[in-house]
Length: 173
Image (tube, one colour):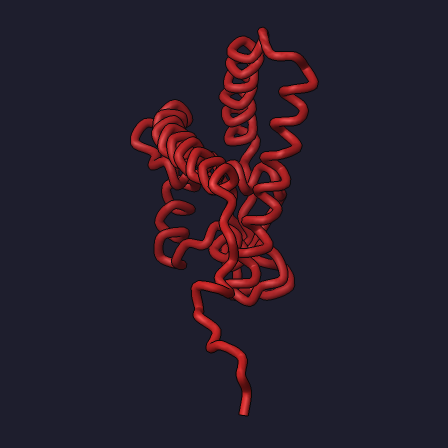
């Protein structure tokens, strides 16, 4: 018979550092604000690309421009959207002349999507203007701080991609 006192679950629960907790609360709040602003900006930028274009279509165009030609099924996986949503966004981008859609040479049933020359040109103009705005807004920041922020956001994005890949069972996000 053991003489040890019973173990209470509270005794084995991880100890949470109050300062670390507050740092995470502040981080969540700031990221949530950043994401809300990013969604609003994305919708506005989509309208600059083509009247009536939806913000999700802007994100799809950016993905195609950055990743190169992709099969429609790969776009679905990478954006984490359902097939019908991607299909609607692709149709609006093709109709606007911003995306080219061709049959996949390896599988005629699939489609390969790529940014059209016009889509790339217009997106580049918007991205250049956004970059100039960031440069103006952060002109008073030390270059090392801007670089550190970029590095830390990159680490956060890689973590999110890995977690998403794990959740979906995919090899990549």
